[in-house]
Length: 227
Image (cartoon, rainbow, N blue to C red):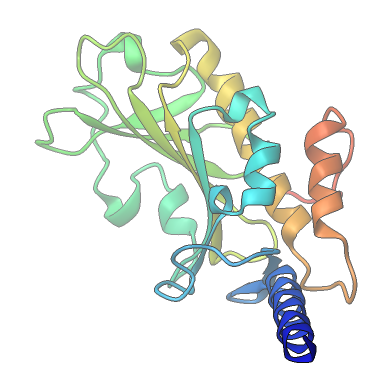
């Protein structure tokens, strides 16, 4: 019986230690430190990103936000400044040609380019004006009524080598896209700011994110930040 009690206590203590270790997991991306709160698949193979939807506690919160339906969010470290992603010509300066883009897929308020000789399929979009700096890579066919899928890359305001990447599946209609993209950029950068514990000795990041996502965006984890 005594051995059984010791075995049970050992199991409980091991479980508690493991739980505490999971709650303390942090991810370091360039100069910033982000709270994860639990282990996640892929952490050992790629130390330069934090997959938001793989954190069970946070994914449950995201499921309650309608605009984030059919999205996947990562916080990612780059090997260089993110300016190359925000340029109207896109990564590598490859997206230089607006001519093949059909008129109905040229989003007002955005520079929309495709690559020379690309046959138009891939588009690069940059907003002409936005408080948060972001760009998009989208796919569409010529007869598409809207973009089929997009990757929104938002510059993280506290470190130019960190971006918040959101994969968007089945975006809304063209007349809703501008407001939709701006809200996604603001919301996802806000989530990253809530998880950023670099300058905090003690911070309840889970509670911060919960308040940010559930109180009609009145809560901000950092104020006065611009691109």
